[in-house]
Image 1 (cartoon, helix red, strand yellow):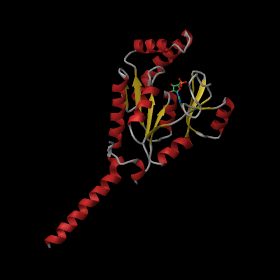
Image 2 (image 1 turned 90 degrees about the vertical axis):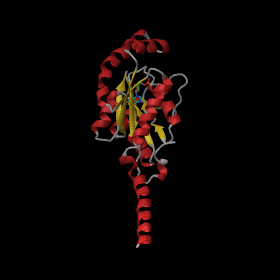
Image 3 (image 1 turned 120 degrees about the horizontal axis):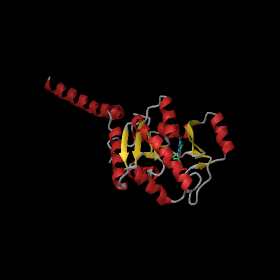
Image 4 (image 1 turned 45 degrees about the vertical axis):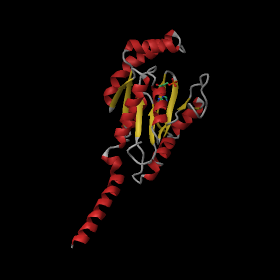
Length: 225
Ligand code: 5GP
């Protein structure tokens, strides 16, 4: 059970915005998919991308797959909370989609790269950043080779980018090492639940409870006079 009451019953309002970034091949999407299955009222935001769907990927499920022209138009319209060119394809989070979920009181997870995370922070939006690390560069290389959907050159490129990106972890609030899947999911879950327990999040519910104590005290005071 989560500490906080379900979001729609909590007049405290807006949900929390989590950002999860990690080098390609760290397994962050799988981790976050498991996380949202475990934790109620937590949703993964669906990104837009100009890349073509891979075998097994579905439009409006894995991504909103759109053309490069449509992506450019959305940039011009200012539709993106953040967007980035990752390995030659464009990826972005639609501001309206995220906002609708947050306003409905849902907590939202953006699974985005370090460039996108920087943009969200520069906008001064309150976020909880979680950086997922593989146990080592060697393990990441093995994982990238293992999934074999990339050519040797693409894999080298992913490793090069990873080497540069990992030092960004200091910009985030939390680090989770993905050494074992279920353990890493539990670490993510612990972070989400801890953030939901913060006074600023719990204030409304706490005030309601405090109100019952105030009423109790005035009843008792009334009886004793
Ligand atoms: P893939 O093509 O393997 O699904 O994703 C490639 C990379 O794009 C991943 O590192 C992923 O985090 C990043 N990515 C996916 N969606 C978004 C997004 O909306 N914004 C940004 N900035 N990066 C994204």
